[in-house]
Image 1 (tube, rainbow, N blue to C red):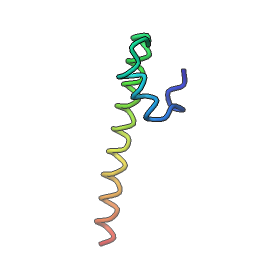
Image 2 (image 1 turned 45 degrees about the vertical axis):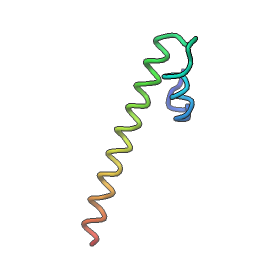
Image 3 (image 1 turned 180 degrees about the vertical axis):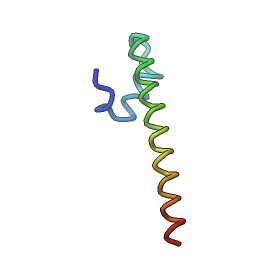
Image 4 (image 1 turned 90 degrees about the vertical axis):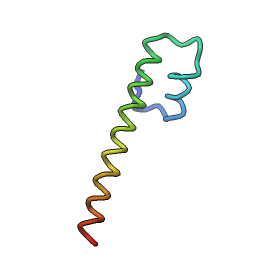
Length: 55
């Protein structure tokens, strides 16, 4: 399964709410959620630094 193409709501559904899902898929969905959160956090930090330089 290509986790990068899944929407965040689909990942949450698989990772936390789908009771019939295989454990390996649950874990992979949770890892993708974690990866996206880290990526988003990094982008926010970079944007803050750029804004500070311009001010």
